[in-house]
Image 1: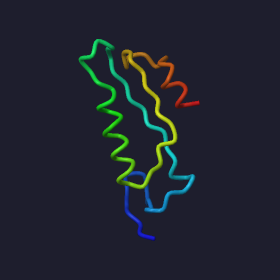
Image 2: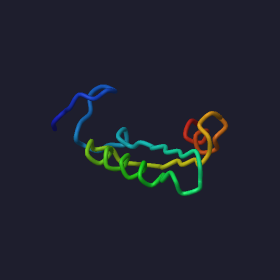
Image 3: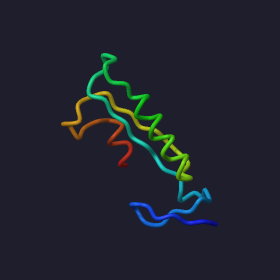
Length: 77
């Protein structure tokens, strides 16, 4: 098994339940000018390259100035 240094510590290339993660994306508007799928695609690619298994995805389409975003709160719970 090979290991790599990451910002959060040491990762390995072996997928385990500890490698299951959730990703979060947010856009400020739902008018089509911002595409949440672009964010999700990049996050999925990042996770795949590092051996993480995306367990859940959370998406909000509202201002980031509020911490009462439903999916953000679901991610934290």
